[in-house]
Image 1 (tube, rainbow, N blue to C red):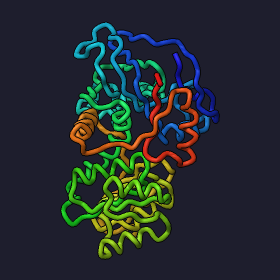
Image 2 (tube, one colour):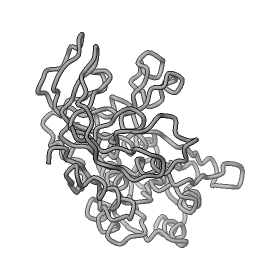
Image 3 (tube, helix red, strand yellow):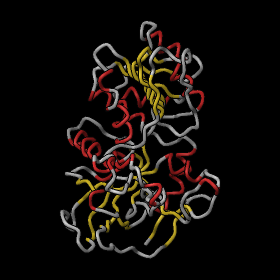
Length: 346
């Protein structure tokens, strides 16, 4: 079968032919219908050799949906032919976090060498993939695979980030989204669907600000050294109750802190290497700063339910599997408006 792999440190992703996998005991074989392209993949491919915690080659794709093709011995609760989404942050299944469905914060995954598909385990950017346990599959419930696949990360990650701050997003509050790309344009829709907050979107590209307005941002601001002042001006000098930084670079993290109101949440999601110091006088009083990771199994089901209700959609560009290297190249150049999706079968 064809697969898109990262094969050597510093190399570009390649389309290769590999053996078709089989489902072992307790596992599920999926015929992949769609796989998402993500900046996290580029971050992994930019790591030096001593930072990689898993061997190469690696089949990419931590966003995946597919059709159940075969069930390993002992698997129940699924049927061949069923369409499902893959929950990506696999855990041990037995620790306290996993027992609550919060496998994104599994206490034992690192020690046991458990990796997400596409980020250590063989991923979804192939004609077939093996899922380690049926609990990591969520029924699509009639959603279109192309529309659904980005929700497994680009939907789940902002949903988890927003959900922890819902109590602060009351009428009259403001939420800022820094970076209106793949995750950011979904976050805007989630904020509009789940809260009464004013939503202000920031980006450096006018086409992404246009997308932000299209999907529901009340205001858009160019992300430059005047952005924090512009947000404060639009909030009567107070600042925002929630700032979601989907870029995470040093300048955006600094701007996020500068535009946060007292008692606000600053949530740094992006992988740009930025950080925000916490201490008396560095931010407004009682600002909380966190860096979340993905979301829980239950939250993925909730995101898919929002999509079925029409509350959130993802702007997508589709590519055949042979075009996957081009999709990564365009993503690296900032030319993807929304999310790129690979179709392993054309």
